[in-house]
Length: 292
Length: 292
Image 1 (cartoon, rainbow over the protein chains, first blue to last red):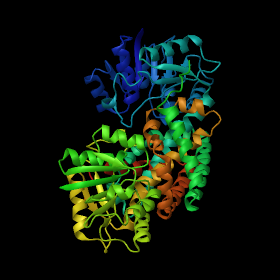
Image 2 (spheres, rainbow over the protein chains, first blue to last red; image 1 turned 180 degrees about the horizontal axis):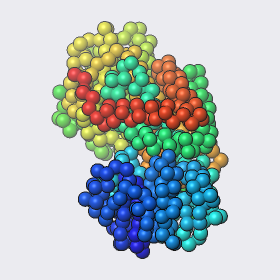
Image 3 (tube, rainbow over the protein chains, first blue to last red; image 1 turned 60 degrees about the vertical axis):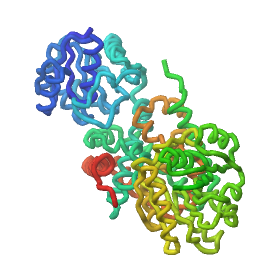
């Protein structure tokens, strides 16, 4: 049981954690904190948090669990603001989409990675923002990756794992570096492609007409280009090395495909398309066994 | 009223046209034709077609409307097979995703573009194939683009427009070249990106693990990479010039974005992401007025 949960950033991710823990009866009190007052008032009205303050230090005092659900660029100031205000025994975790940068922030703020800090990342979300978009089942059967360091207290890790399990999530573990590589491939790169595609069409002279004839496939394909630009700017900067490698890899693949299109090389195109279809059908909608 | 509709290629596109026209009471008899005997038998069992033959010439004889729902690479042989077997007054249309190549096929087979041939393209589909995937409402409120030439008989165009309207579709008109440019941007390019992304991940050594952590955004983004590889090979080759131009344009945009990631240029990234988000929110889920 969490006695007092402090959620810093009561948006889709933070709000959904609070709702899920409440629904599971796994938390007694939830304190919200954030920059947008109207959003926090809405969070109280919706019953997502019991009360709020816009002061991070005040928000975390007396909390036994603190969840930072912020754009990566806002992590360091939040850690600075909570540093001297944490209750003894409090555990801090986060939901950042890249982990090396948050660990670097923690190291910079505390001098070393503190044992009570458990870096984490729930692999869930929609392209929507704000507490209105949050819902109690967002994490059900979704994966949460925790990336504890050797400095991290195993008791703190266990509490964070228990918290996510109470939300119905499947918890797994990775090193920080491996997490950032895997996410660059499966999430950060696709977001770059969706943004670049929509932007390149928006820059066409006849873009009005082009978008008018976009059909269902385009809608699905570009949904992630409606994601929060600030959050994604921060992710790109935080995970720039792994992302740049993936972008380079993709550009190479695209150059190969473009050469096959230009040369009318049907055999090569069929090979690429068939391999991609097999992989997608097998892995994404099919049956890759879950990790323990 | 269509007395006898002949559908060559009774898959998702052809089967859905037959179902929609039947549901609307706009057709008396439907004859199916195709290469897969089991699929045609299934089409009869499902009531999508009344009867079938695997001989194109036989299938079209006596039909007043012929719909070619074939991969682009199969259009020319089909036109050759039906050339001397059409009933007087019969109208032929198609559903190919690129139009210049089908027009070139018709010109090659008939010596000139025949007045009874109305090139068309319903902007609808799913990543599924075969008559089992077809359904009567596929075209409802979807756009169908017709690209008649100056040689085309206006009476034939009117019949094809009426057929699509009976399915609930909105019909609009474009030149062949413009159609192929617009579709390269909104459909063919996104398919290339989805195929290239999935293929580049499938070629990673640790691809098992990478796909395991792919979340909902990835699933949406890559859905179109499950599309029929033969169909897409044919589209790439048929529309290679417009598609190569769009691929070049996109690669330039991606290089710009990659440079911003590598250089940690947050301002530039935010500009690209925000412009893309505005365009997507406005055009794709928002309110671009329909063309007449």
